[in-house]
Image: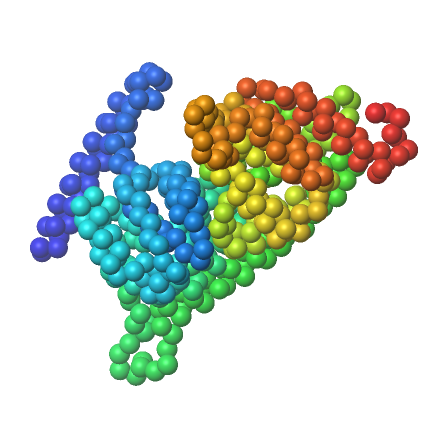
Amino acid sequence: MAWKTNKGKWKKHTGAWEAENTASANEKKRLTPQERNTFSTDIVPEKAILVSVCANGTTMERAEECLNELEFLLETAGGITVKKVIQRLDRPDTRTYIGSGKLEEVKEYKNALEADFLVFDDELSPAQLRNLEREFECRILDRTTLILDIFAKRARTSIAKTQVELAQLQYMLPRLTRMWTHLERQRGGIGMRGPGETQIETDRRLITEKIALLKERLASIDKQKTLQRKNRESLVRVALVGYTNVGKSTLMNLLSKSDVFAENKLFATLDTTVRKVVIENLPFLLTDTVGFIRKLPHGLVESFKSTLDEVCEADLLLHVVDISHPDYENQIEEVNKTLAEIGAADKPTIMVFNKIDAYTYIEKEADDLTPMTKANWPLEMLQESWMSRMGDNKKIFISAANRQNIDALRQMLYTDVRQIHAIRYPYNNFLY
């Protein structure tokens, strides 16, 4: 009887809640579009503490830059940073990633700042995750988890969703132990005891089967994409590559006069976009690809193989660099490392240094006798340095946002594409 009474109260409460929400929805419908846009949902962003270890010969400046990037990742995912912590160690602690003293310090920060969870700048082992959750009694995320969460949020097409789901399951599989507390046998009782299948074994089997299914689906997608790329062999293919958030999609919109989604956030573009571009009556295909990032999870590289094949089969690469970023040289290294990993490091490349409108430098005073660093170089000096250090690759400095030097880039593209086209199709070279 008491259960029925409580059930009735629950139904009454639920009915009142539904009625209230229906009235609110009807009231919202009567608003003008401008008023509807200001309708607040009162969603409070979650607060996080970021933790990093400066180890294995990493400089403190590099560790701080990585942590700043992690903060940008958290902002892209919808959270806010309340504290950043860096500890110097010879190597990360195998049990808790950070030392015991720093562990207690972070606990004090968590309680004082009322943080909802912690984010660590490296991929944590299953044991480290389990120990840290036991110590802090809250959610523990690592860099890989955060990147996967952003990818899952940004995926729009079925291909991207399949690729992200596969990477998530591959990451989750060795970490199932910490996700379950009900590890009892599925069935029990008299006559039912024996070597049955535990819950974690069931989950591991189901995830393994799901991974196999997703791999089959991606293999089918690979065949479809390969067939599509074969149909494009009649045109020269150019691919935009680079670090995430360097302006590839903005440049794509300028060159192809399209409306590819572009935003000042990490991984705004996950899906490969191909557009036909014509410069002085010379057509070619331009591809916008997913951006790279340091410490990119290996599972993502494997899952996005069908997407990255567009880069491998391109005839020319446009390597876009954010010249206004203080750590752009390391970003170039990370992109080159990923290109080497997928077998595209030997492609003809044009280095496109973007965002010259946002480039700033610190001008030295006349009486300042300290050595000049990269932060003191004006853009003209930087251009000369890059012109002499980048080897055989062509270079150009542009601003996609302000359309600076875009015509020069078009001319450079036309020259290279025409040269590739003349070698491949000498019989119709007279057309161009």
